[in-house]
Length: 131
Image (cartoon, rainbow, N blue to C red; front, side, top):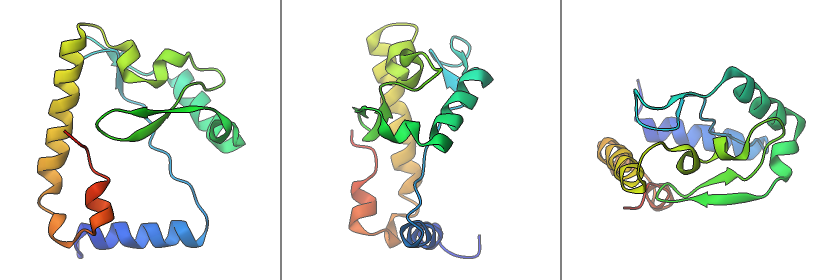
């Protein structure tokens, strides 16, 4: 990259604000457990989530906060089983193994972002995972 990653993030945020654009983080990857235990989210469900975003339906449903990462997760989506939307509800294994994996992922995010935090604003720093 030519510029610091925070500059690209700032440019994106400005464009989104100017055009009143929403951003959606969609898990189309692994669900239901650690690698080798879980499986990829089906293309059928990924398409249903994208369709609900495009139609505006997903912006009208009720949401819950996702621990540690502070993300908002829809409690429902047309054409998608509700448990698919929250990784904690599909995890195969113990609650302790889920929590350990969640904490490990958060630590990886925190450690990786520390390389770029020197130019991040206080609100960007505050938006990161909380362990």
